[in-house]
Each structure stands twice: as structure tokens, then as C-alpha cells.
Length: 106
Image (cartoon, rainbow, N blue to C red; front, side, top):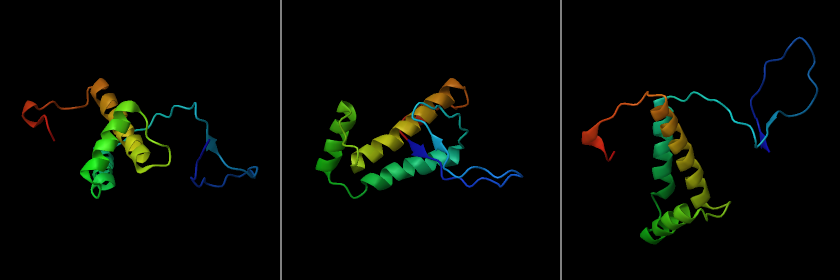
């Protein structure tokens, strides 16, 4: 269960006390700007900037095997990476990307 921490505007009626939550089965359509995607990409770099080559190798193996432990930095890296990949695939599917052969490795 994920808890939504967004403050809601008070309405004319008194709302029952409790917390809004997002069930695991929910799919949420969200529009995300390219600036936010760039921030996520920089976050990936930040997560690995102090890691040793051996730790990076372990990360690559964990990503390939889907074996990162839930409370590890590798799991957090995988979470952000997955989000970026989903956003990029959606952008391609929506045909809102620009293809540049000369910049295959950015």
C-alpha cells in the first residue's frame, strides 16, 4: 500500500478522518515534462557516483537477474531506471520523441 501525502483543499462538507492510499493494482496516468526526466537521469548518476567498479558490476548483475534486495541502493537504482524506461517508451509510442542518429550515446 502506498500512502498519498498530498494535502487536499477543504470542502464544504467535513471529510471522514483517514488517509488516501493508492492500491498496488492502480495504474496512474501522469504527464511528465522532459526536465523532470533529466532530473531522474541525474539521480541515477548521483546514486552510483561514489560506488566502486566492483559495486557497479554487482549492480549490473542484479539488474540483469532482477535480484536486487528490496532495501538496497541497487533496488532504488532499479526503481528509478524502470521509471525512466517506462517514460521513454511511452514518449516513443506517443511519437513525441526526436530521433538523432549522431547522438546515439547521450
